[in-house]
Image (cartoon, rainbow, N blue to C red):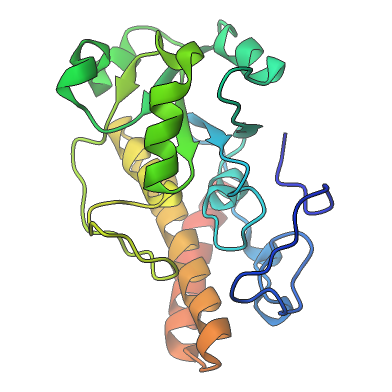
Length: 234
């Protein structure tokens, strides 16, 4: 599954619903990011298990991961019945799946560290529960088919840079920020830097479309930084 803007869904009626948008990246048409999608190969892949309320929100940052890294996939979350394609992915011998989720004493036995991912040649596949923090906790708790999958959390976190939604906790990172943190766990700083820069550009462009105020110098600087990171990887 990919982010399909043409799939049936309930109308988007939140802030920004009347904005003319690019049908692909869902940014305001004047702020389209399609020409700067990185599309690079990293040392890990991400499987987004996405809450149905999140898939078509323009502010969802999961699509930035898919735009940045080859091999990433999006699955729609189901409480009882997962997508068959997700189960197939879990059983693919090429990958070593882990759920990215904060540790807790209730499931401490499931938690692993980054060295777990380096025990063989399998590709790390990070499963991110893509939704609000409240939704993600519910998804983790209620989805019995996830119970036997090891869990991992970033060893280092910082305050979120995400400007488009408010969180009650500054250390609650958005989906793209979590992915960049996990890339650093597998020593893929190049891909992490690319994703961080693409995320920064998304943040700036989206915020500028909301406030109707140009941030030309900042946007230009981030675009140039992103291009300088991606160009050697082409």
